[in-house]
Amino acid sequence: MRQATSTGKVVLAVISLLLSVLIWGKGLQESFGRPSVVPKLSMRQQEMSLLANPAIPNSLKSFLVGEAPENKLKQVLSETSLDQMQDRERLVLAALEPIEENRRSILELPFENETYASIQKALLQKHIGSRVNPSLPSALETIKDDPFLFRVSCLALSGDRKDCVDSLVSKRMALRLIFSQGVPAMAVLLGSGLLIRQLWLLFRNANTPWPQLVSIPLSLFDMVLLIAGGFVVLGEVLLPTLVSPISETLTSRIGSPLRESLRVFIGYSAMTVPPLLILRQQLHGLQSFDLPEGGWLQWRLRPFTQAFAKASIAWLMVMPLVLLTSWFMNSLVGDQGGSNPLLELVLRSQEPLSIFLLLTTTVIFAPLFEELIFRGALLPVLVQGLGRSWGVLISALVFALAHLSVSEFPPLVVLGLGLAFLRLSSGRLFPCILMHSLWNGITFANLLLLG
Image (cartoon, rainbow, N blue to C red):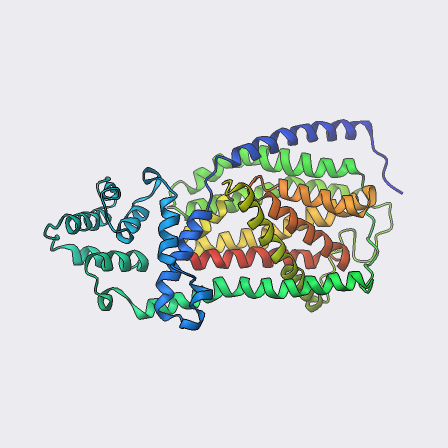
């Protein structure tokens, strides 16, 4: 038996839905204007490959480093116009490129960073055959905390590998490269094997039956109020508008990127309040119904080992599908930009407190909140109202839309489908939280390695 749906609730749900369509439509449109982090990630990956190259065994170079990483890096840099590059990117390109007349313009552009400007001047002097500034060695010393820039600049000016190549840095980068390249590769192999096994079991009709889904006596209008009203209108627009001036005042005297990390933490925490309060009120209204074992949301934290095993297997199985979807979309329409700004922020964060705040937001808060809303409440109501297939599909689409990124939409739909199937096949919410956290955590770790 369901709760009766009042006329007022229907009207409020319709208004919330119309507003959320406008808000999400504008957000998706604006995502085209956000820069893509893909070129920067590709650049960092190639830089790491070049730094690690001397320490990588020849038998593994083709897998970990690939063919001609230097040419790949130059290609990535060349795809960005010079006036849009930062000083460091211009200097790297100038040091890597044999400076011909068509590239001399790089060395004649104004550099804001004084150290970079002195190295730029030395590269130009060498190119035209003039005497190199004697203060150059001290300039190179100041960029030693940027191992890649130091190496390419040093080699371009002196060509002495003994002075320019640090074996300790190469070994350290080799370990990073093994993790950033090896872990995804192993995950794809294992995940592909698990997918093939699952398809074989499905073909033989030998799958383990799924547990019965606990029916939450809420209506589709309740879910519209929760997602459109609570998550979008109140959570993504109204409350951030109220909290943003306070957040800016509190963090105005804090340096970047810690300032941005604090604002993300405060903003995301505030965004969760309206939908959580609405969901609490909705569940509180079910007191006249018999509470099922495990509660309406089916958290079921124990046994933990079983939940973690299910989450890990699901993560492995969804990994190749998400990567395949990303590759297919990039091949079909190219990089559409609109990357999540958090990726860029994690990539350039170095302060422990900044990293901790971003880690807490992305690996703990986001999985907990999003799974509670999308797989804890929305999915069961959609399944019982529209059927399993439509419920799974619509919940995945709403989950992907909520991230307001056109370029990330297809991969997020696939991830949402995987999380929905895990929720239904396990009969528990906790494995979904663990899988989501694992997904964000591995992504976060890779960004730190590339940062």
